Length: 165
Image (tube, rainbow, N blue to C red):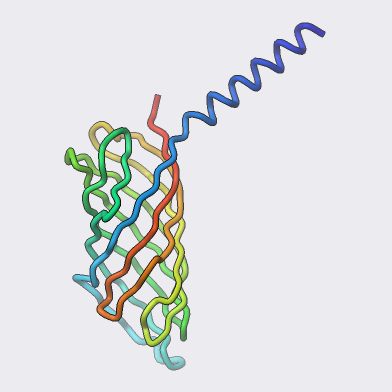
């Protein structure tokens, strides 16, 4: 019985230690209108297109990873627009204040009105980094806070990360 209690305590302690290894992050960023954008109409029905684009983003409320603030990033993505819905996926490369880079993959959906997103959400996965952030892993979500007719957008971002041991 005593061995069972000790084993249970060790399992609970190990789970608590593993859970505490995840560090929560949150912030907000604004992405400018795409610098590069190519759109190809499919032609099978109105407003059905494939789009590839690249935009620069800056943190308006930077998050910190391992004590280093996020500075700016480049989002490169592909989307399929069908009527008033867009499904998209892409990569985001974030430059940190010290010059290290963090690499994300993302995918999400948006609801459009006259080509302007009305609501959007994406899920991201942190897939790697450079320098002090090499080997980093994480995940989270971004939600559209506001979109403008000029193509810019503001996002609320949250998630968690873990550095290698």
